[in-house]
Amino acid sequence: MIHHCRLFLIVCSIAFFSISCKGRYPIFTPTGTDSIISVFKVSPDSVKFDKLGGNDTLKVRMNGKGWTVLSNRDWCTVSKTGSASDSDQVIVSASANSTGLARTASLSFVMDQKKLITVIISQSVGGSLYPDYSSPTIPDSTGMSENARLLVHQIFAGWNLGNALEVPGNETGWGNPKTTQTLIDSIKATGINAIRIPCAWDSYIENAATCKLKDSWLQRVKQVVDYCYKNNMFVIINIHWDGGWLENNPTYAKQEAVNAKQKALWEQIAVYFRNYDDHLMFAGTNEVHVDYNTPSAENISVQQSYNQTFVDAVRSTGGRNAYRNLIIQSYNTNIGYAISYLKVPVDKIMNKLLVEVHYYDPWDFCGDNASNIYLWGKAFAQFGSISSWGQEDGLNEQFKSMKTNFVDKGFPVILGEFGAIRRSLLAGTTLSNHLASRAYYFEYLAQQAKTYGIVPFVWDNGNTGNNGMAMFYRSTGAVFDHQALNAYLAGASKGIYPF
Image: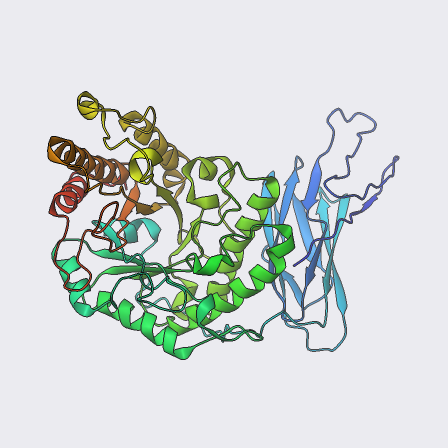
């Protein structure tokens, strides 16, 4: 939906004036014995829907005793008719337009029975870029009783099926064999009970004009999900890098086209997996970013619109998806950006959203294979250089900030990825110190994550060579890195969720 900047103000009093421009609101000057400037704002001041209709959100602020709102058209409805809160939201819903004519409605907001703001709602006869794939059914809460906290409290430790189903167009294209039931059985046998499955979708579209997904690919993803379900595991499927169409485009120039595809893909994914119970979670995106610099207001606004499109698309399909726990991401899944910028999307149901961030700090230890920083932890500084940042205190500070800003406010956090490369070309005591330090990193991180209400999912790319991050042999399911895996599970055992 596109928001236009137009605000109509009618005030019946001694003074009368109106202001209409983007980002500004009318200010009511008191008269007589009034001594306080009256504040009454509704944002945005106009909303546009296409012919399919949908939902949008208005934010209302005031310092009066109460406000009411009334729609003058029955095709345009509101989620509430008034409020006494000084800050509130109203969800506007437009039904599908089958009249063949463009139409408008007016929402009249009145504060203290005298101050009026009119919001114009318009609806075109034009369709969206792709067909509607939502196929809505009646909401079904069967098997969906767990809210976000209760659900993730059951997750002991998570693991990533990396470099597999997210490979564009070819599951084995990045060197890993096809995922099998044997692999998933072996992972469950270690105690891990949750698997994040990064997925590509764009490269499996059979018709670019309609954004229709190949049935064969949906069936393959379902097959892997079912491998996990047979082990009573929790599962996350997402839209991952997928060639970059979604991840690399948080700009106004790309927003409409990307949101159209995001909607079409998630409607199809959600419908296909609609009958799965709450062991299955959806995650809307992955690491959406332009670059690794501080994001602009444009980048943040557009990236978060992708989160909202995801939530709306899944909920629109009904059935169990009306109650499914959904995971939304911060910009680039960065903790600092989550704290500074992330606004949780509007959702139709309470307590069913989770926040996702990733953690590869400090990067010179975790991921930079050109770095000579191969140790982590203050106790290991005696054996060589450690990074000047991102040690135990820094990790605790980051995780604590997520607890304060999200976990404590009812949004558990998924640490969707974390890990550190295994520098196996080191030798002798240098290698043994590196491996011990790396194991300590896994244990410490897992324990602290759970203690702060963050669910850890270790990254495994299947690479058992130098600078790889594999914990398991993909072909057999056997454990490759016993030291790191045992440390991770030990940390997960020590960590206790705060909810």
